Length: 207
Image 1 (cartoon, one colour):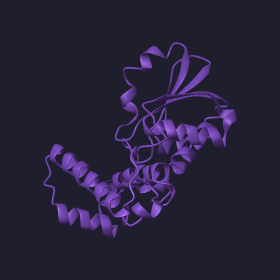
Image 2 (cartoon, one colour):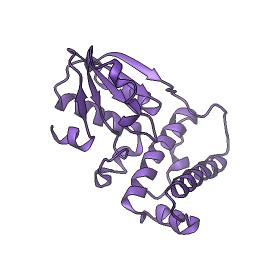
Image 3 (cartoon, rainbow, N blue to C red):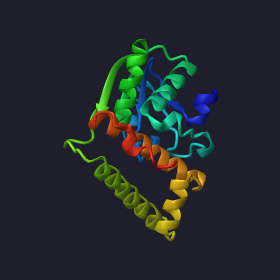
Image 4 (tube, helix red, strand yellow):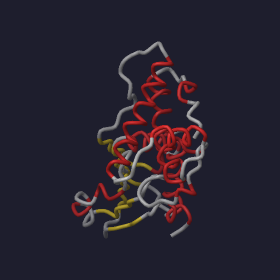
């Protein structure tokens, strides 16, 4: 395995001749496919990987500038395919990975024979909102709800002001910053796809 494969916990299973690559959705990792893979391994070589920031990927590899857009994740996908010398594949993308696969296939159409999108959407906001202030506040409510869930689930005490301040100031723990960065890349995609590319709406997160 090369650098990209190691960084993304790449696993190759199966004995077929054609490749099928499985991309997981936001908030999950490659284990989400565990009940699906047994149906594929007899006919395909199945490639599993984690998007940067998911699963057990090293948070030190997470670059906030690179992953501020979905193009960063698409570049990772292409790097994996090139490193594994996969000349063509069927790509199955769940949720945001559907869009990651679409972006990657536009950049390198020769590497993809088919795209299968599961629960994917090119647009995540279906109402037109004129107030960028409302959008920004609503997105931070989403951050708070997610962290409330994560910290209560892990049994840790969630101290809102302290943690949110560290996030805004860019001083949060690596794993927290990594997760926020992943969420921010989705948020930026939301704003660009659903709100006319007003990326400044979400640009002040400080992470």
